[in-house]
Length: 53
Image (cartoon, rainbow, N blue to C red; front, top):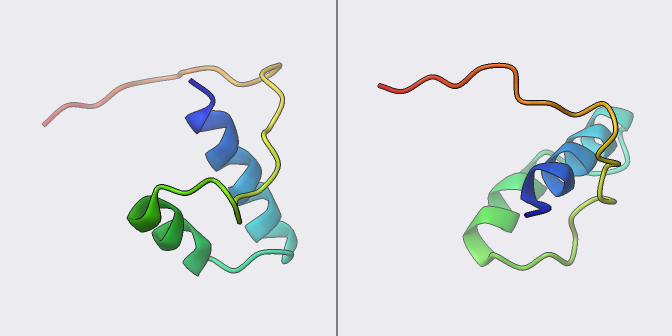
């Protein structure tokens, strides 16, 4: 249930230049949490919209 928060934290670290973008592919391929960024706090995160095709 923390997946979105882990992804947001990782993307923030990528944006700050402390992690490489390639870590995202690695996280999805290996399904291993190590190497991901810090878990972002839940405050301020909300689901805005969902698209289905």
